[in-house]
Length: 406
Ligand code: NAP
Image 1 (cartoon, rainbow, N blue to C red):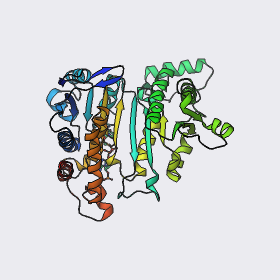
Image 2 (cartoon, rainbow, N blue to C red):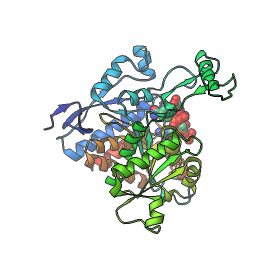
Image 3 (cartoon, helix red, strand yellow):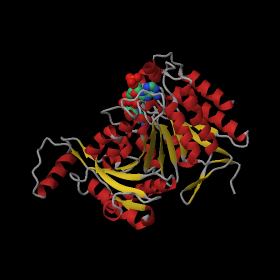
Image 4 (cartoon, helix red, strand yellow):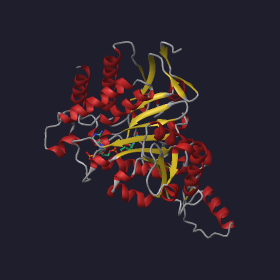
């Protein structure tokens, strides 16, 4: 039985959503406050229209970023961590991560706090946007990026630190020469972390009837990290999803290159080759499964393929929590000017509604975005390629709300 209001709970890895749940949001830095405000208004309008008042969201702001530092003396105070741990679902505006200082990324901190081990980014071409590709309509990808392992764990030491000197000594004790001016970074990739994200990606492909899952790796060079990632994914797929999966090897040997109906092709590609093939023939790729760093690169490349990273939403998923955000950052040069495109975080809101099972509201948001594009009601990042007058961030959100509310 679902309760009327309060936090979303989890049962066996699935959210149990009350009709009037409390959800967290972070405004973010730079353009964050403007686009987040636009997103909350659009999401509320979609929920109100779809459920005529029987469902609604009680939004609770989590202090974070530059404004929290001014008010609370920290970019992510303890009280914010506690709110995230209690409510576990949040919509997040982009947050600045200063380069070359000791401040750890709050994005990474929240992912770790809720153990959000998969970053999922659907990237599909939207008619009307200027793409660098000749056939951008062939781009329909979903990137699953492992979110908690790999070099993002931040195990690294500056070249002149005591720790780096110690690690260099250890390396030399294995008979390997290493120069004294060498900084050290460690790249851990574990089996359990690989398997849980692989399980999620393959399950997604099966449920959504996708064509293929491609493992992106550089296992020819990093044999025991990225190479192991590839091997562990194949082993898991054959162990747990045997009846749904055909490997590329099997396709060629047992099926003469013709995919049997209703099955999903599992293959792998070396990262550098794959990055260029995504540009030359994106139709060869569908669901992409990658370790953390490769996943970071390929997610942004996928955004570039459809011409505008400003419109992409992404979700960070775990077994008992989720964070939804735009794929882009704080775009500081546009902060406070009412020109930023809020579509990325609005699409993230649609992913959040799908996650909650409020699919009707999610669908009405996506349909309103399509209609606005057809009407050429777009912000400057898109208008500049169409040689038309743009609308502002706020006016764009108003236009979506009026389409949704009709
Ligand atoms: P960025 O903020 O994504 O901005 C890069 C460029 O992309 C902008 O100058 C703008 O380019 C365009 N752009 C991005 N979002 C847009 C939008 N919504 N509307 C219109 N144009 C948009 O990347 P960055 O400059 O590398 O990063 C800035 C800060 O954001 C850094 O502190 C970084 O750490 C942080 N960041 C945070 C997240 C996150 O919170 N998840 C993610 C990435 C980066 P044009 O010049 O083409 O108009």
